[in-house]
Image (cartoon, rainbow, N blue to C red; front, side, top):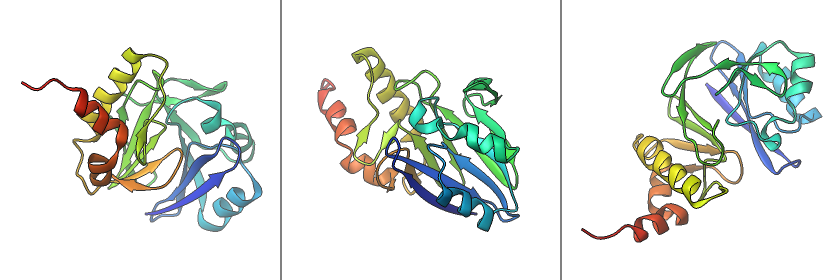
Length: 194
C-alpha cells in the first residue's frame, strides 16, 4: 500500500490518495480537486474505486462532484448521502474490504455527528477529529467533552505506533499525540485527583 498526501490550498486541507498493491485507488476527503491530484490518480492508479469521507464539511468534500464526473468510485461515509451523492455507510468499528485493503471505520463524534476516522493497516485518517498537537473545534463544552472521550476511548487505545494522517496540518503518531497534544494534556490536567 502506498499513501500519497496532497495539500489543497482551498480549505487548507490534506487529501490522501491511497493505492493498494493491485493498483486500486482510494481518496480520503476530496477537498478541491486540481490538476495535480488528477495527475497523481492517473499516474499511480489503475482505477479509482473509493472515496472515504471523514465528515461532510465542505473543506473535505468540495472536490467530490469533480471526481464523480470523471471516475465511478463508491463513496463511503457515516451516512447514506454526501453532497447529493449516494454513499455506503460505515457503522462504528465496521471493517469493509475496498480493493485489496481492509478499511475499518471508527465513529468519533464531537466536531460533527458524522465524524469517522479510517484505519488501514497502521495508518489512521482522522479528518478534523485529531490533528498534530490539537483536536477539532466544537460548538459547545458538551461536544468538546464528547470529542475528547471519543478520542481517548477509541483512537488513543490503538497501538502507539499508529501513524496519524489528519485533515489539516502535519503527519504525526499516536505516541507523539499522547505526549504532546495540548488539548488532550489540558483535559487530563482538568480531571479531579482521586
